[in-house]
Length: 69
Image (tube, rainbow, N blue to C red):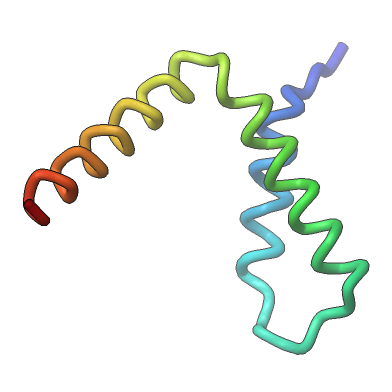
């Protein structure tokens, strides 16, 4: 039996949608894109990968904050 990880599936959807040519989008299309990105973030957040991304972003923000003072 074939199983699909939902986070991987949403990642593929985001990748395909970002590769499309830039064109005017409808509000429904924008809302769908935002929803997919938010759900992907919620699925990745509790994983080890999500924690490592959070740590990297945290270090980047702290470095920028220190540089601005």
